[in-house]
Length: 470
Image 1: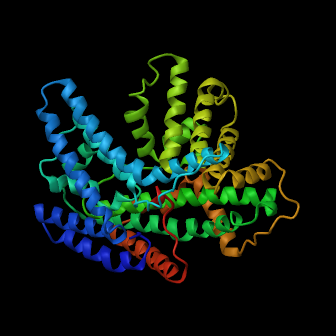
Image 2 (image 1 turned 180 degrees about the vertical axis):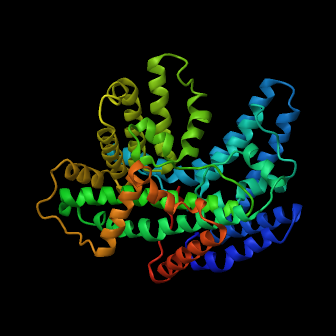
Image 3 (image 1 turned 90 degrees about the vertical axis):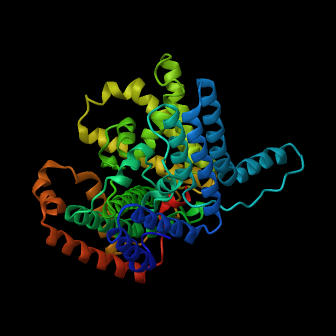
């Protein structure tokens, strides 16, 4: 069930909010839990039971961790829990990829190939597994305590606003909010406005850019021109930012409406001056997770320069693989890993010597080229786009006709991406800052935005959120 469907907006959401507002204490938690289970079961009617069973194992192991007497026992218990969770991810997400890759090697060697299982990828499995691993590891580190009740842990796992695409949440940040919550007028105003802004980002800008991107990436390889390739790549840069940040805005807004506060997941990433800066601003919960649960355990920067670079590169190769079971995603991770190393080797010496406009534009262009790797359906299409982006595109390129509305949202998306924090437009930013308006004005403006988005959703072809596949 996606946030941008009429059923969610007009049926599910009003019911859940009514349950959250008109119940108290443990009854409120159970109401949100059952709604979250229904939300996930709507799209994954059988996998929900797999997650419940896996969550029960986490819950059992977490209490065994507290009872463990030695460090060795705790390591064994954590190892069992992490292995069980990674097994879910490996089976559902990577089994077909591994078998297909092995078959490719076996074909070249003239050997018989193996049958490749067609396994459906459950929605949001990567986010679910990461949070479940975080729960166990934090308890082993003494940072967090086990859930007092299984229902509390289930609510953490299945809490529907962040369930399918984050932000990635830690249990010790979430648990206190289950017991110490109040929903005031400021929560309602902030929640409504944030949700509606996120919905508008998705429906108006991201889905408009999807029309350009999907058309360009559907062209035959011999019809991709340089202009077409750059238009498609920049449009995809806009699409993925507004699609994913729009989801995060909606998730944060929905949680706020129920008295929960989720951490920010984006901070104007396209004004970054380096790849390091980009990853401080883009998908903040993932980059934080990588640092705390992968980079530091690998040794971080504690074992010399060469080991630091290897750890950085390894983390982002695995990050690419986390995004999808495809060699293009692995290559995308390698690409970002290389640039993060170059930031430390070269770019940090030049970054402050160049005008900020230059560093921002260079970073955006290289990040956008990375999005071409991310979006390409296979290495063949990637090779074609890479050649076209380098200026060697087809002379018989298929055209993309930019209608007035597409041109408007393309320009608006770029404008918001680059100038949302610009000092010269501070008065305009202040005027559009919902937090500076009174309650009635915020709710009224949000209602208008909601109705416009709902009308657009009703007449357009449905576009799911990009990160649902991860």
